[in-house]
Image 1 (tube, rainbow, N blue to C red):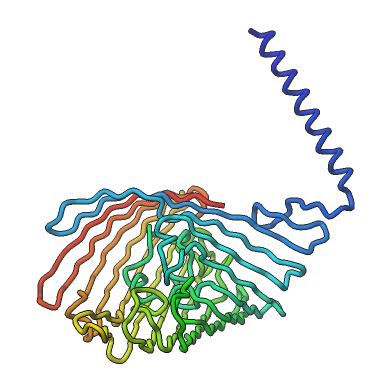
Image 2 (cartoon, rainbow, N blue to C red):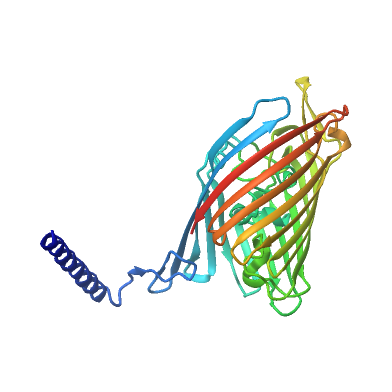
Length: 403
């Protein structure tokens, strides 16, 4: 047996030596050529030797299991790949000309929108004339409320809040502008704007003469967060000094054809929608506190089918407030609590309830947000126009892995 193992070891040594010699020979032959090689600072990626292009590759998968119990109904067990994403970014010709591509392959990611498949999340080209300016053209996230801008893979809970699901302005196609000045030790700020179609991602089922205008201001009175920490939840980096972000955004979607602007069901008539977003985030020594306000308003939220007046579709109007508090222990366990209030507008109070949500989450960050296990228990209390109430419970376990 020992002779057999020794023979195997010698054989493997010879194979490895031969492979190393082959690789060294190829490197020698390719010296001075345009062959690509691994050099990305972001992880897995390629940069041409002549530095005329770069591609960084990333993916992430969210696997989720859960149990939901609605009042007066039997409990339901869920199990799904909630998200599966492929991301590519880099530059072509010069670092000033960047790009970002993100594709979604889970069942929810590919839900049909405007008679189209919905695989494309982001497809945007960037031009960076200076270190402060970024100009984008294509499809990507609008500069709306902060939790929507944060990646779904960088949340402290298994998903965003009930208010994000109803009031956010999601992704859209158009022109994007970003001007920022960031300094870790001094007052910093960012100004963002977008001129877009208004119907959301991959929507081409009809022609629309309206556009959406969005503007946002982000202020960092105590200096910029470490490693862009305002774009992920939880103080994983344990900020050594207090950091605060305050932001406000406004979006007007002219002649919108969907019930939530860039999302939702098709309306029977167009409406002009106004959305307001206010956010605050504070981080220090493992603690994170966040609060947000969001709203949507329009004139006459109810639209009627002119061919059948019994068929109606409403714009989701109203407002919501989210508050969230968490602490990341030095062991990388995290405990978070969240409370959300959602109040519908008078136009739709007879068809949509007011909702309060209470949630608690326990997470273990193995490799920050790239590899983590999250558990969540939530309770939603619905209050209907008639005075009736309903309570819904759900519990989830979610595992995230990505690069």
